[in-house]
Image: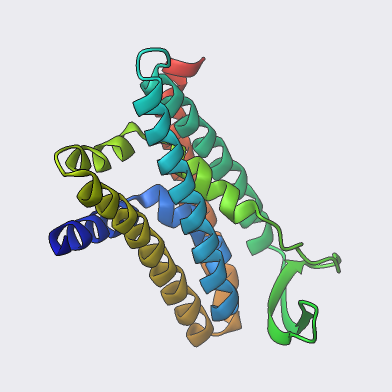
Length: 222
């Protein structure tokens, strides 16, 4: 049982940290207050886990009816488009950022202060949505390599297999929360003046990564 727990947790953590597209996609949401960044990491991790479970379930239940590889390739292409768009917006923000802090009210008397940044002349702030979770789901569906995570479970008894998969999901969530929190703390330590440079750098990496995924999968999609 302990072997299943440790192996699954380690596999999930390594999968998330080893995926450059994962880190690039979540990095922009990490440039916030550490508490909010931690919540975004959790949201992405939960979405990613849901995507992995969904893809695995489809593979097991309808493996003879659906081409899992083609479905996964389509998801990878979609991730590439998302990264390209996010990168362009990040560069746009980096060249016209107005950075400040103010109190943010989440209702029920819960209020805290965190950093906001928007284009000069635009006083509207970004709305908190479930976009991070949705992006996590998309990443969970992208890449047939996720199915490799289920293979060790097939050799285990039912309880061991269930334990392995759950541990894998917890490992991926914990790893992403740790990465996002580390980026957020580093950003706050560097100070506000470093934010435009960080946003621009992340935007450039996002565009390069998105272009790579689109170029890699376009021949199978278009």
